[in-house]
Image 1 (spheres, rainbow, N blue to C red):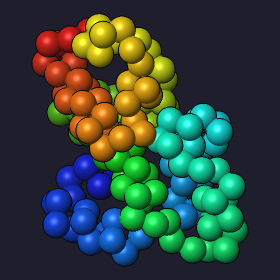
Image 2: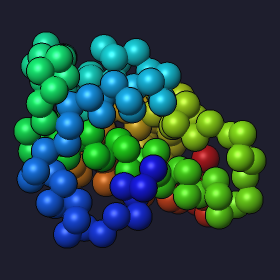
Image 3: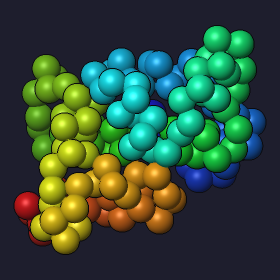
Image 4: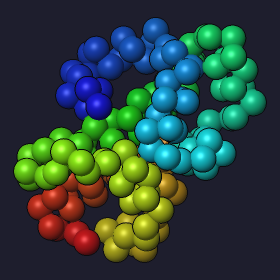
Length: 138
């Protein structure tokens, strides 16, 4: 996903402008994650977001930041796959979806999904993912 390589100033503008709500559906489909689980993972209120999707509205700043956070995580994983010479057939978005549910020693045995609903947690999860590339954690 291109959001991973987007500079921070541009990301701030995207968040302030609001991400189109339908992007939630695009991302849940790419990740093959049930909507209820996706919403719970990043801390979105489903009726509110679903209403915005139907009305073709944008998400508010908090909702946009949460959505961009998980999209950037998918982009980070995709970048790691490409850098390691991984297969073009590898479905990174689905892999991230499954990885979020795995208890990790680097998180004290907790699942990354337990941290995705806060900005600090998303940063921690991104750091752990990056450390896995260097085999610092399993």
